[in-house]
Length: 84
Image (cartoon, rainbow, N blue to C red):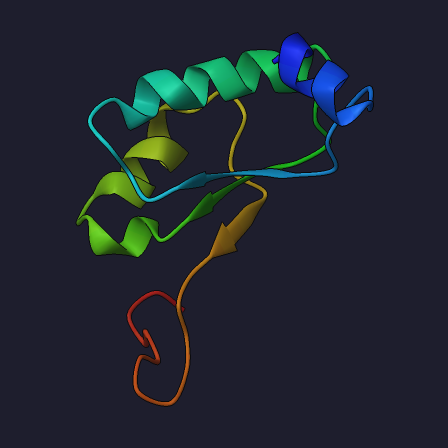
């Protein structure tokens, strides 16, 4: 994380999203939590976790740092009533 921040020439990120759950999304979330606790980012979010049933709830239940932002696809043809 420090190397990426150095390349961006910043000390922290305002927000970072974990996009679409992959194989070890909880392991990745733990790394992001650690960076958050070390003030490397101000807010953590998830993106498109509604595509994998149970993934969002697993993050919410197991995370020490809960997602502060949830980004989902939403437009007239994909309103995601169940996610609201």
